[in-house]
Length: 52
Image (cartoon, rainbow, N blue to C red):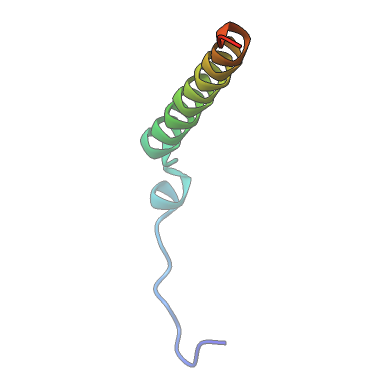
């Protein structure tokens, strides 16, 4: 618990969303999922086509 009072932020500062960072993170995660799926598909293809 703070021992002093903090300054209150104006309402506009509180309402401002942090969208660019959220969008970048979402895009990065989506690309990572696509890369992971591509890697798994490549590994499955490699195992199927592996000369025995």
